[in-house]
Image 1 (cartoon, rainbow, N blue to C red):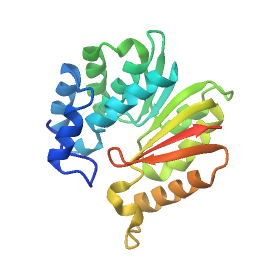
Image 2: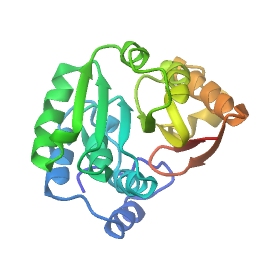
Image 3: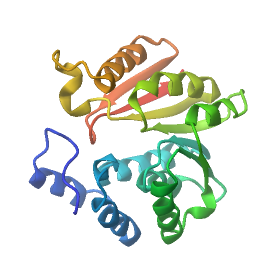
Length: 219
């Protein structure tokens, strides 16, 4: 694989074993990994094993209507869309025309473009424009960390009972435990993790996949 492990506790060898012993990326996904690896922000792409997990999870819960906050070059959207039924729908929210232009090509190559709609602009505006009633089956959040709490508060009321929110980077390479780290992203992630753990509207598990993936079920 062109990318190294995002899990800070995995060696490259163990990471390669993990990827090889799950559903591997197909040709379209491998091509996107290779293209993204040439970009200065390549580390924003989710890991292959996280993508495989997300596809499996979307299928297992029978999700039909999903939202993604933070799309980058589109790998996570492919993972989600692959798990949706033929008439499923994924709304992707991002602010970058440059990165999502790569995503659009990748979605077409992967055969999932018909399931995906892209909204370019501030994600909070997009989320607030959605119907207020419970209608979402699944959401994935992987965007600007200081806004995580706001995204969560907009998504949760729109999520059906037993629906899932997946939130990326919640271990932040272990920085959430480093008392010397007081940058805005780390502080926001610590606060977000504490907020979710204390929220009796949900149950949650912080999984050690990638850079930490919190899985949240609405009660």
